[in-house]
Image 1: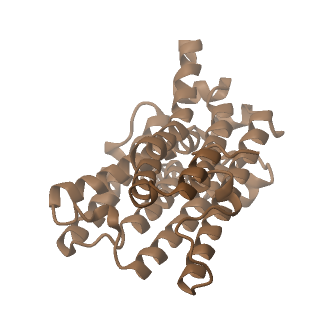
Image 2: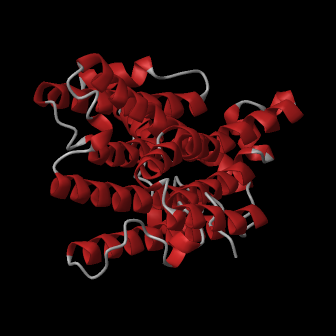
Length: 328
């Protein structure tokens, strides 16, 4: 309990919003640092992507339950009655005074579904391949390898920002939000479901194509069928779309009156709403930046251009197929 007491007191800011947001972000860096140490010693990236997914799940879980942990700890110190743990089922049913709002549960579950799928997919892939070529030039350099883990912590923190922000709002404020589903809720959920479905379908088509190639059912060097005939990177498009959905649903809450009060931005007027919108929008913006400018499209296109850039069929596919946004 002394450790818990120290952690709770050291992160007890004057604004309840920060008392949940800051520890949730700090957890991302703590977990990645903890996984980095044995990975650096073993010069192995086997658990890199898996640890990223587990960090997503851990940060979301902490942001959901930290306010209740604080309340229960305070009650135990004061000798009072501890509040009940939040009811996820009650929140989904729209029951008030459950400690959670249905939007918090849905957004957290959305992240959980995505992180579990991606983490298991990438872990299975590296378990089969034995290594990840992205780390060929850095796994033997401890500073660079450590930097990769802290970069992943930053990725987790920025992508999760809209969800962490929603989960950091005081529970009492959600009673002021519309009980019915709003337009931003509908648009956000549709974008998330559509984006996740697109990403999953693209990955499955790519996996089936790779398996067929191993079984010598075709001799194609690059995939140009299915969704890969609509976009050269349909999985990346799905990824950016689902995070846009999460940001859209979150923005509807954060930019509302209760959201502004909970974030401590109500007195800033339009600037407060802009700040809230930026906190939600940084997630899809950062994801799109990484995919289009850093580790996604540039690495993939560079590799394929080097291998097949002089082939007419490859040039034809690039000319006729959009890089990112699928053609109809």
